[in-house]
Image 1: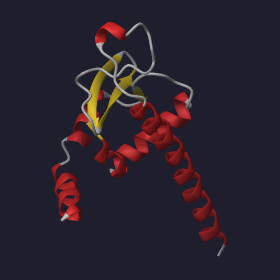
Image 2: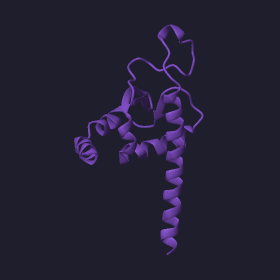
Image 3: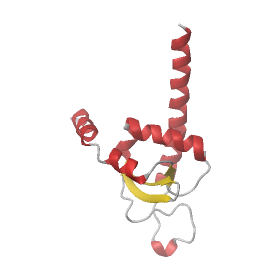
Image 4: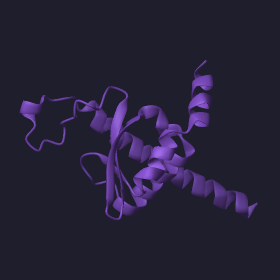
Length: 126
């Protein structure tokens, strides 16, 4: 019985962390878009390549860094959620700009090209 309580507390902690990350992400997405001429270091600027329903992510591992534009649907991908938790633990929540996750860019590319998960996600929408 104690094990299930511990497991429940751990799951609650993960859920609360993810809720906080999602709220911050959604707030930043809802701030609106500004034209390039309006951008002067303003944290509300959203680059033109970040379309509605997407957000920018930087995969950073050691000296490797690569920027990705990711669909919001990936916020339910189990491996992406693990990366979000790692990002929260490593970087905290007081960062501006693109979401930085601590992983090699090649690992994030594998997650984003996960055809099985994409098919399951599409099937769940039908």
